[in-house]
Length: 212
Image (tube, rainbow, N blue to C red):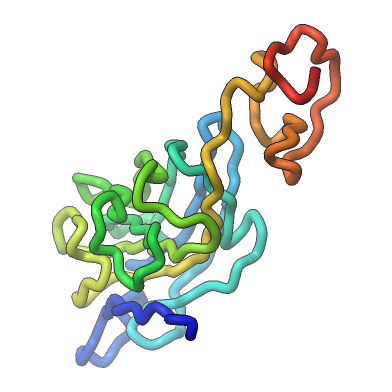
């Protein structure tokens, strides 16, 4: 028997006769950037969803609505509002152990302390209580709520929008297996991570590396 997690969902505009993001209180862009400055996920110009309660779950599209994230690595996330006028409180959550909620320690990845039309904050992939493989990532924009925290993954309020994505968590990158001059793991051939792209150049000076 395979257990399928049952998530609670945010609700915006409930009972008010409008979708919670109709006036521009919506997630416009979600960009996740690696420590090497590589954008591993770019979901741009999404607009206000027509789904009920301004909540939408996106199917994985590589580099757009999904990414591979490595345990123990801290990424940067930038979330931008659809409207250049309305300021939002943004937050991100990741169900690292696939138990159907975002209540476990470190599953609240972060958010902005002051309302803004765009916010950038660090998101760390926890080093414990993590299973490898696909996981649900939730990104929320909410207007007029105050800063979002670990208890707001299923927020119910008037204005805002929520996106759910699926990201793939993989084991930590072994730094000694990467040549010092390789600026990004994505461009280093590594026998432990065969999906990486090869680099060009002389790796003869690299120590403790599959490339040498």
